[in-house]
Amino acid sequence: MFGQNLKREIDQIAKDKGIDGAEITGALEEAMLQAARKRFGQEKEIEARYNDEIGEVELFEFREVVENISDRDSQILIGEAQRDYDPDVEVGDEIGVKLDTTDFGRILAQAAKQVIIQRIRDAERGNTFDEYRDRKGEVVNGIVRRFEKGSIIVDLGRAEGIIPAKEQVPRESYRPGDRVRAYVMDVSKVAKGPQIILTRTSIEFLVKLFEQEVPEMYEKIVSIESAAREPGGRSKISVVSRDSDVDPVGACVGMKGSRVQAVVQELRGERIDIVPWSADAARYVCSALAPAAVSKVIIDETQNAMDVIVPDDQLSLAIGRRGQNVRLAVQLTGWKIDIKSESTMREIAEWLSKAVSVVEGCGDPEADLLLQQGVMSLEDLADCAPEVLTQLPGIDEAGAQSIKTKATELVSVKKTADEEKAQQDVEDEERQRAEAKANAAAAAAARASAAEDASDKPASDEQGDPPADPAADSQE
Image (cartoon, rainbow, N blue to C red; front, side):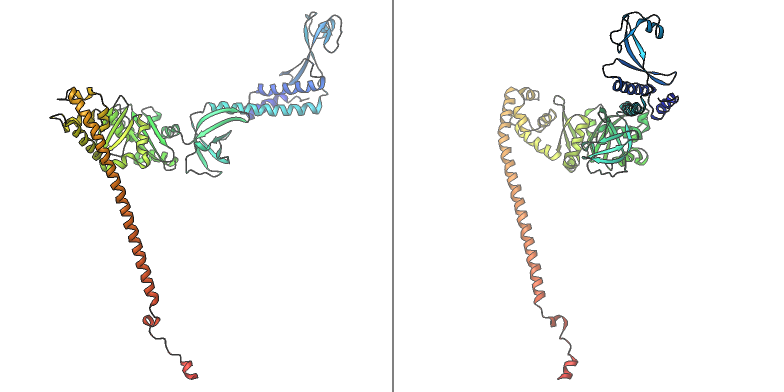
């Protein structure tokens, strides 16, 4: 049926498609079995086996060995079985009788073709799944093919990957045919084949890009300890070196910024801050808030929090646009960070000094000590345990209670002062707005008046009397 070249054809298909020959022979056996059951009936106990020596799929029907036949379709006489098949067979055994397949013809060939095609597709999908399952966590290159419901379908060569809408960087746009790099986030099996989920927004993608650009990372000399990212906007990474002679930040930046610029270019202009990692939490947080300068850090280890004091002109830089800089620093370091300006801290210190001044001999030094212990407001002072205050020089339990009472009184005083200041700010803003509106109205009136004066002037004033018409004089 298949000819003498079947074995060679199987070997060629296996080579071209990268599929195990056993997969193809299994498909042939399955196709043969389906055709045989259609021909002989579903109730028949038939088995298909590929004979590699003769290059043919053979069919065997199992029959019971008996002395007297009652069902010729399912039984065989013992004498016939011993003569034609197995001399050692006994009554009650089952023996496989080879069926004649020469007249199966075109129907069997078509069925075999369909089954083989399906098995080849399944095998290719299985190979693709195995290949990309091992590539999970890698960066791959592909070509944008099409768009489906907001997702980008990427041609990876032997397979297609998908970048869901949520894994795409905002403001990035692609057209069919564009090249794209992405991180293999997940590989799963679905009915249509392996589904390869790609991402361009993950922190892992950022880390992998640096590992590809920085040889010291490949050699395990420099490593990224932590990373934080807001895709399309800004990222921060902290790096450390295992060799004291290698500057981790310099290694990541590269000569004239070549290495970091390669990553920035791939991320379509995303800003990247590279900071040195440090076991000293305060130093680490100060680096993470770069490029802002930090004046002082107050650490509350119990709350895993820090109050960071910066010069007034550095406050907006430390916080960043819409809080981005401090938000990324929190993600990078794992510390809760509260940014305060020096003027704000001076104001807080003044209020604390007023509260502790109820105890004779206490003032600014004690207020500074309270700030260092994390008492950052009058409310904190009013609620703090007396033991915190009695640790300060010259303050006993009675003094501590007096300070707490004074702090409670000053809370209401400060609240009133803040409300008055806020009201004054509102009034000043409304006054400035009214003045600006009045000035604009006056300017508009002045322009309208000037335009009216210009339109009222006679033409002779500007151009002189019109010249006499010689033709009119001659007519007269």
